Length: 255
Image (cartoon, rainbow, N blue to C red; front, side):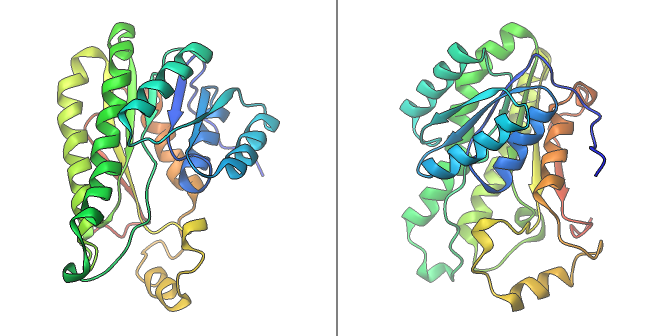
């Protein structure tokens, strides 16, 4: 298959959290194919992360593995320092790490369920941005690409903790875009639809068929579709695109 490649990221350093598998893995691979040095982050899945990074290196990628909890202030500071020492200052940041996403009526949620979503989708991007933005400002260039979700735009019942936190993440993206634009830093978000990955292995066929029937494009999205959207936002070609949310869902978002 002919390789699709337009945007180049030579000389840049990327950190993609939660990149041992799923969407994060494909995002990290895409940034590497474009020439960036990429730090693959993982926390628990040591063997899976090693396999992902081995595939990255086998394809000619340059980077490192960095272990840490992306929602921990201590771990984030350490990871950013380690990447800076080994690869150089991070100027492309993709907060992607995600926890389990339970769906249930509001009566069954606990506040801890909500807090976990806030920790991953608001606290983690906040900590990562704060840790990386100083070097970006000094360089006069930076890209922060949050991975959000179509659920905030389309609404989704029995999913209040996740949807609320994703809405907050989009608000964070917009505020940071305005604040950081004068420094040559763009902050955007990619909002995937339901993209089948490893975490969806146990989803029912009925649910999958029902969702697929609603997609105007008539096909499932792929992790590569999401990765290509991130690659665009990371590129120089997107330097005047800021504070935006790009839904990657085959036309399903209703506006």
